[in-house]
Amino acid sequence: MSGLKQRWYATFETNQSGGLQVAMRQRLVVIMVLIAMVSAVPARAEVKLAYVDVQRALNECNAGKAAKLKIRGKVEAVSARLKREQDAVKALQDELQKKGALMRPEQRQNLQDEYTSKLRDFQQDYKNAQEELRQKDNEATALIVRDLATVVRNISEKNGYTMVMEKGQLLWAAPGIDITDQVVRSYDAMHVPAGSLGEQPTAGAPHASRGTGRNEIELGGGPQSSDFGSAATRKRSTISR
Image 1 (tube, rainbow, N blue to C red):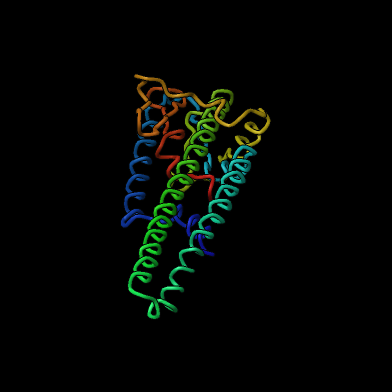
Image 2: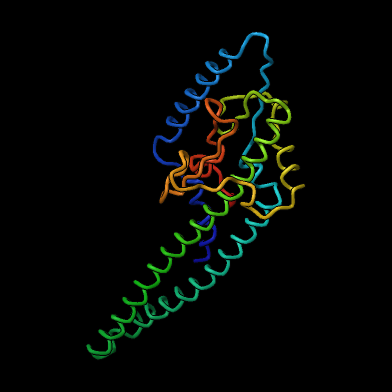
C-alpha cells in the first residue's frame, strides 16, 4: 500500500499496445491537412502559425497548480483510508495463519469469512477510489483546457494567426512559434475561476456529445476548428502529470 500514490499517478502514463504507431499516423494526417490548408491561403496573404504545449500550460498556469494540489490532497486522504483498511485485512490474514490451525472449525470458518469479506470490501473500495479520483482529474483538466482554448482563440484573433496547433499533434516545430508562455500569462492575468472562460456544451450543439464528457471548442470556426478543447486533448493532457 505504500506505493499506492505512485501506482495511481503511473496510470496516467500507461500506453496502450500500438499507441505509438497510432499517434504517428494521426500526426501524419494532421501534417497533410495543414499542408492542404496552408496551400489554400491566397498567395499574398501572410501565413502566421503558432503552437501551444497544453500539458506545460496545465502544469504552469495558476489554475492548474491549484487543481493539482487539490487532487494530490484527495489522493493523500484516500491513500490513508485504504492503508487502514489494508492493515485490518492483513491483521486477519496473520491471525488465520498463526492461530487458524489451533482454532475449532467453527471459529476458524468465522474468521475466514470475516477475512474474505473485508478483503472483498477493500478491493472494491480501492477500485471505486481509483475511478473517483480519475473522474475528478478528468473534470478539473476539462475545465482548464476549455479556458486555455478560449485564451488561445483570443490571442489568435488579436495577433492574426492563421492557425494555432497543439504541440502533441506536431512532428516538429520551431521553438520560436511556441506561444505557451503567452497563453499562461494571459490566463493567469484574468484571475478567473477554472472553467469560467470555456464554452459550456449545450443540448443539440454540434460539438457536444451528451454522456461522453466530450466538449469541443472551435478556434475560428469552419475548416480552422481545432480539437484543442476536446476530449481527445484532455485524454493526452492531465493535471496529474
